[in-house]
Length: 325
Length: 249
Image (cartoon, rainbow over all chains, first blue to last red; front, side, top):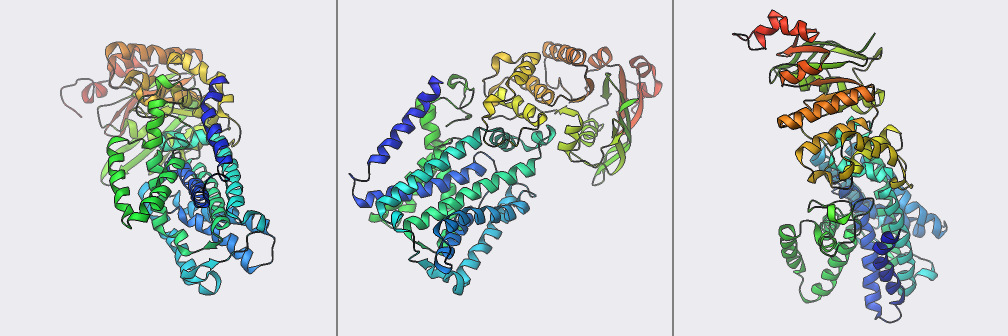
């Protein structure tokens, strides 16, 4: 129990610091931090299927966009209350995840990924072309988010709290028998079949949960920006969040948060000086793949190690990784 | 009454006939071996029984039930566990978790979403690890284990399903003489202590004739005979085509 407390303590400290930041930092930084929270949730949801589930979820942004569009459309086109839109975003994203996932889990790795890209792009095309409903490439602006959460500081707290709740749920899921089985499927699907696990159905549920959280992230994006546009479900964004997971570390729990922080910071701060900031990202990625294949967070854990979660002890974990927070 | 019956099973890959009329009967609580030269179709036959592959023709009957068309995970749930020829484990998970995944599946708890896995199936998992001699390595990452230990883990994963029939595909492949002896002793002990029925294939003839109660000889995918070790040893046909006869048949 004590060691568990010890491994969670640093996260608790960071959380408390985050709680007290907005009054003392410039508004712009509050905004950037909020953007990192949203992106982190999106990357975390992707990592659930990619890092922990071993599936080639190549077009995860589609579900982020579906969540954001559903929320925005309900708020702008109907008179339904805010919370209905808020709940509908993630649910619709999960339903679309179920539909697309149902086909994808029937295919093996790369074909899974290719089908995802195709079906996800189809959703993008609908959002891009259906002017009368989605506003086409202009998107929807001025989404009437309730006043209580529309200022940058209140949005910050609202999103931080929701992110925390989502992360706690994700952590519980990953530590559950279901999460453990999902990781076993990542390692060896054939073996899982042979011990009586219905691999496809497990993968499908994994996708549904991940797309639900992508939907939550989509809704939070609208809370922050009060607008939505087709870029949100474009494949380029899917690639970016994939890179965030890689940057932070596939096989760690919190890695994608770090990946999202690095990515958003690079875009914001290096992007000011040069529009070629992706060039720097490219160089970082090359170095990373060669020298830190387990990602930045994977490396930090390796060096300064919190223990892997579960019953694993740090000293027994070799470079091939393990279950880590 | 037979526990497992394989009747006239065929499987081709393109023009290659991997299994070409295999027959096999396994009695409850027996240790049955399948022997045959490399490429005889032993692994394919096992894959056909456990549902990794579907036969082109023929049937597999387990406890009076036709299981031929079932997917692998359902066949496992009927009570057939298996190990693989190459160490087929979950390399990134700990040894403990490797076995726990299988125990949880057996207990139909793989779907639990919000309950910590740490609090489930611990005792069963530890007892299996103790059985195969891996208790002291429970917290190691499986991928970092020595080869012999990975093979033992492989068997431990299969035991997690509490199978009635355990199928072992060359359990001693790539092992030294001592490791082979230890593994065979383990298999015998398991068969005895858990009342398991075991079907295995093996190329070390000494091992097979020492341990098995019934031996099936497979040659080019075809069952030549099945019988007691002495009958198999004395069969002219088997001598000719497999046990060092002058000409292959």
